[in-house]
Length: 388
Image 1 (cartoon, helix red, strand yellow):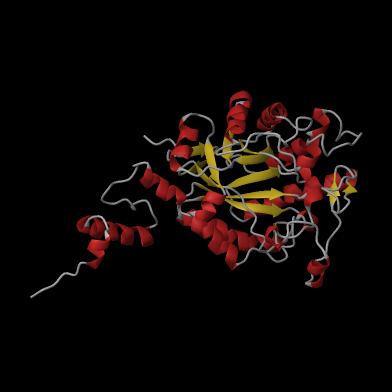
Image 2: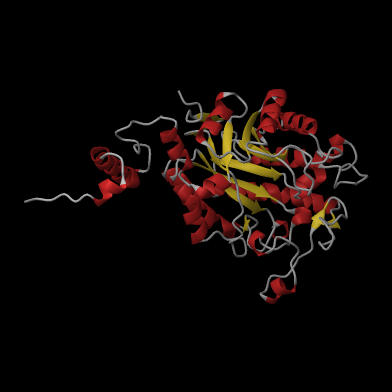
């Protein structure tokens, strides 16, 4: 029996299967607002059979955006557009989730498909000017990038408050899963890693100090996020350098986050331009397996997972509790439904019975015709039925 298509209950929320849409920035918002594009984009994955439909990194403040095109939850006016997305997901059986974050030193840059670097004169000419970025330390991401302002006590307090306020808005919008973004070189990751945090106050130096803000935010959000709804955290399990954040650090942080009420660790990696770890299919799955085993917390695996048998094996072998698809989902928004057919978990006569009925009825009708006609061949295509 398939393991990946078994439901998963997290607190009071039950996912219909273990397939999750990984949060992927679309860089298509204006002033943080979700548009028709976002409604159609995310609707595909609800119809496509995903158990968890996670909305992309959504900024907790204007200065926390990665680009001018990021979604936002810093204003109550943002709620309505996102509520439309959450409601559609629920109507078609998917659990709606949303990731909230602050880009920190990697804010105020070009959209990925417009350069993915510092904003320049051409960007400014079309009205996309840079803003001041913030970070734990005065370290630019790379040469030519903006020099961050170091967050003082007031700035840190604002970041904490912004996360809690965004979480409240996510709840009002109808999301059942909330994910805190602590990965990929963004603000919270920059506090965690010794590569980017050279503070000498209570938020820098020791491991306990570097995780302080991450823990404060997790506790603050958990205090207002309903007890019957799960809380996720996305971590860079390793930052890519042997002198930086390690998998052992992630295990220790995951254990602390679990004690603070976090339910799932979403296991990614990298963010600082160094890659001293293996690459390849499912290259981040071992991180999810180790954190799950050693911190005794549920995990979500992500990273070049491209095949239904591969995804099934990850769950069946106990390496993770969820499999998140990013690029594979963009390539095939119906990946879970196609996977169900590929592993033989459907009836041969009605293989589309689990699809949304508006498509499934038609496709099963087509299946009946194809079964009657037999396999397609050029000869069959050229044959013409005649009546004398």
